Length: 574
Image: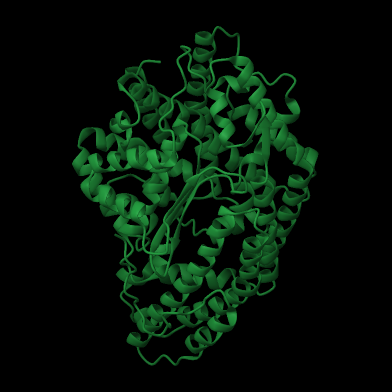
């Protein structure tokens, strides 16, 4: 069973209500005013600050969990937005004062640089970027992001007499009756399209707001600001363009060839958008489980077989802790779309959120989010929140995407033999679509935030050009209005700007780990756990090296790695 970790500081009351700034403010002020007379004093300040930050972070995380589980509960949404406005806003100012105190301390140079170099580097960037005039702008940004979440969470459709969430409608894209797929796809797409004006308006406001935040911080555009804010010390926007070029050269042709093969197998001249998930041989859709409880039970067996310690960690998530659940997995009305893993940072207890609908993608999401939880648990004894909660996302996603691939040998827990192969092939084929889609979203963001003052028409044209170069081989005749707005479904564009290229970088790392796993499973899982145990205590390249992986997402790496995927695909029947 999971248990809260003993606090690294006794400064913070055990029963602190960190949802109220009035309770946090005197504690932060004590840290800001505390005299520093030696390097040990500075180390103690770092530990005390970490525990206080963890308390505030956990309060915000739990409120986010509550509102995402119940977007239709005004009280939950109000509590979260009150925290954003009344705690997160003043907390940013207090954090800046502490960052300044730490970065400018004469004792900072006396700290063990092997231990504190990453923290000090990141702290200096935080000081560099902070502007008090951006605090209210960031609060407004959070409010707009939640407006989008609320709109998305409220989307429901009635299909053949029954109400469904959009996530639940995914099942019908696997139906062997093409008319059913067509009808289901159009109902979902048109439902999203109904809210296009509200969604575009929110995005317009976010783009304007984010540009002003960047200008206030001394940057020409929000892209350059975010690359710095995300501590991208190891790559540049040009490297992101190279990733897109690598995908265009080596993955897009493979994706389109798979599309042509699929169309031929289905007896179609070309695919329509509702032809991508159905089985090409007319077999019944893959149905890995009938309930979330059954999904959990089968996932438990996967991890038990993969590695004893991973099995034990997953079991602790299922068990949870008294009064604190770690899983909310079913799709239901009023629940935010998507999936995520969140950490309750003070008690160091993970939480997994998803919308299971009984399809193969749910299995991949379950093991993906479990990988994030494993990461959180493997570094949960790290005393500094900066090294538990600020791990580079490029490596965080290696933790999750690797589990999707290393779960392949154990798909027989969900399916009989032939269907297990179908699931494996389907996952690998999906990567042919995923990598270019990552490039599309990243390059679209690059365009949006470097073309300030653009119109909606210009934005739509840019989207269609980028998607046209990197998208699948599908016929959208008569659906052009829907093709122009499919980016509305990508929540990262609204709530996590510039958080997407990380998936591409990490996917290439995960594919490397998978290659290692196929050669030596025991060694590969040991390397995986060793890398994850580092948390964020080392620079990004060293985190990859810690898991025996190369940090490389160049066109050459994409070519080599994709060739391995194609060799594995060749072994799996359609």
